[in-house]
Length: 328
Image 1: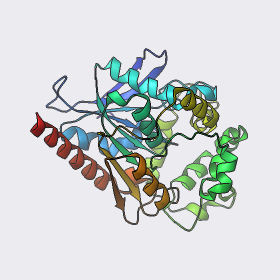
Image 2: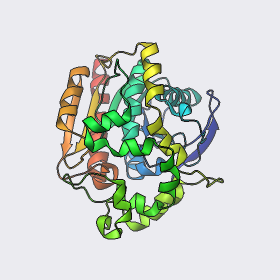
Image 3: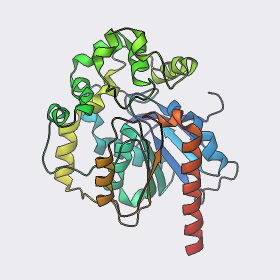
Image 4: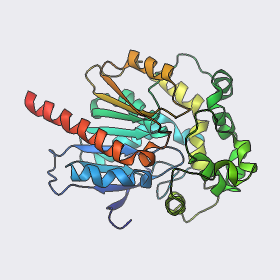
């Protein structure tokens, strides 16, 4: 924990964020490429613990915030505060605070969705985009409630439960079991079901995160002087569908990402939330999309495949930097 450089700053958006700011030994302001890493649900900056030092040692500056509702960052109660437009404004404000004009955005899970939308809301701030576990989906011209989405795609039915306000207290009442259920070993034939929380630990005793890390991750994840409603902020991300749709429709966001933007997508073949049809669809909207499958890996690839992620992303970025240098 002490090996990371922590900062807590009030942004121009009025919100206070905690983030790790890890600079390489070779850092040069204005010349060193910055990676802005965005975690998903339920996670925090600590989810990137295996990648931060690896990428910093490769010469990148690595910025990893606790996203809104998590860790040492502000935790508003209103779900509208968690719309992707507002989250992207916060990320842009972090770059402004650090005097960084452009960065590589890297996201996992909800972070993958957020950085993909960042590419639409702030296309001029991106050098490249790395998406992990959740493939790109374009803004929809029609609002589809989550409960309807769950009927169409049963593998996403858990989101309909998370959307309900009652989920906050129910999950808090069995938090350790909930986290163990999420971090269980990948099984493509077994969907995530909340009912499994009440069937005993044997259902999900084998997890991808070591118990010692799970305990520490929980402590870091909920590092807040106010422990009440500690799951409210994280679950609020699932309560933003209508807000997101209205904002994207009003802004007339495009479906396609910037045509010259390099994009890398990495996923685990045993991740039940990531289907081949969604991956193929993403190629239609991202001209420079490269996708890479991690065989026999599930959703939590930052931990399950920590060396693979560190190496694959690091090498991909180094190759991009070399190409850019060659063009100058």
